[in-house]
Length: 137
Image: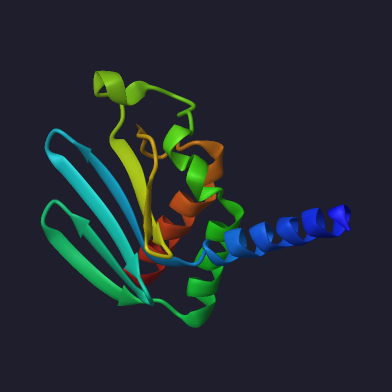
């Protein structure tokens, strides 16, 4: 009986954690002196802003699904503490980047990292967002 309770609790936690991974909004910010880039995804819309210029595109159901699959693979509770593989941003050698992911009424903010070289856990997400921009430009 005790094992049944433990197993049930485990499955409830797994199911709850998986459902919490569905995102409401993704914000990717990149900045340094003189440059500001922001990519925002909400529902099926992606907005790209660079130094005041703004573009907006609709994402297909397949593209939104790809984003949701990537988000499910990321432990959102841990993104605040992810270590950047490089630190060029400290000496203006790279743009400063970060993610904000809103899922199930909660906001998860990543640690900062060098744009183009995020922690391994966020690399595919960064690449996918930029690929959506390139496809739609």
